[in-house]
Image 1 (cartoon, rainbow, N blue to C red):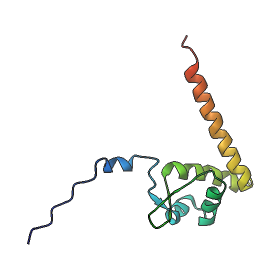
Image 2: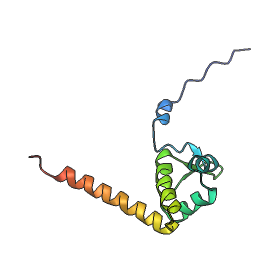
Image 3: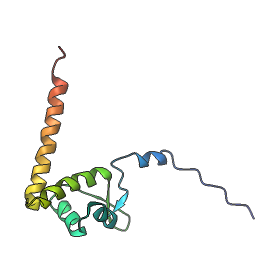
Image 4: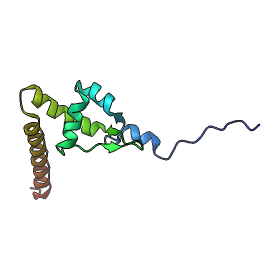
Length: 110
């Protein structure tokens, strides 16, 4: 009998720990981290604000980046904002932030 050899890690496997876009969280774990329901996360998907990746079995998987977006929506909803309005606010804030970054990159240096 040949002893089992340890399998080498996939190239860049350790990088997944630092990748904020790696879909590491199941829907249940994501909901627990946010203090929200799974229905809340499904509503963000339905609104088109975040689109989680799917596992081979079809289960939603969320990244840290997506959870930060969901947390921003959750904070607005907790303050009384309707979920569809909160999704729109977060989307517009992100668009404004990106436009400001592009604008500052295109400004000539003094």
